[in-house]
Image (tube, rainbow, N blue to C red; front, side, top):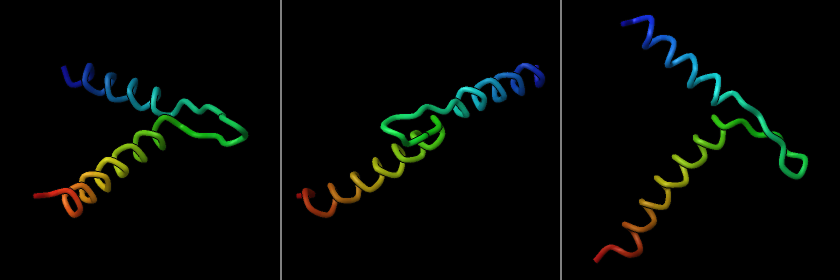
Length: 53
């Protein structure tokens, strides 16, 4: 059971380590995921500040 969970986490981390290049910039899926999380949090905060009734 624990070994299956460890294998799953390892497989997910391997997927997140995949790198790709767009217009000369190299990104990993991990960097894209972190950017999405930070952008969502900042967008939520800005929405609460400026659009909250």
